[in-house]
Image (tube, rainbow, N blue to C red; front, side):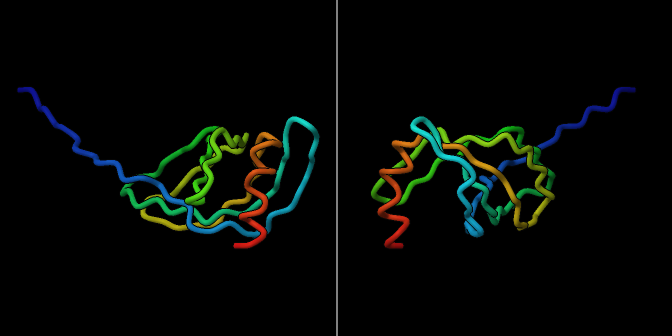
Length: 104
């Protein structure tokens, strides 16, 4: 007798709702490295591990792709938590975004 099961896990996007505690760690001509805290929500019924995530910031006026972190994140199921991470971005991208961050 064979037993066949199928798993119908659906995936919902993980969202970042807040940034805080932003501190500049390093800056040079090529990259800027920040330490920050992010509030991340996992709406899924299972844990998610994100290994070296790449982030994308869309302010409505400017989109910054390729923001990198070396932090591995483990998101608990159906949770919202604050994570401390270091992120690196291209210096030119940060300079384009800076005026919008300063004005809110």
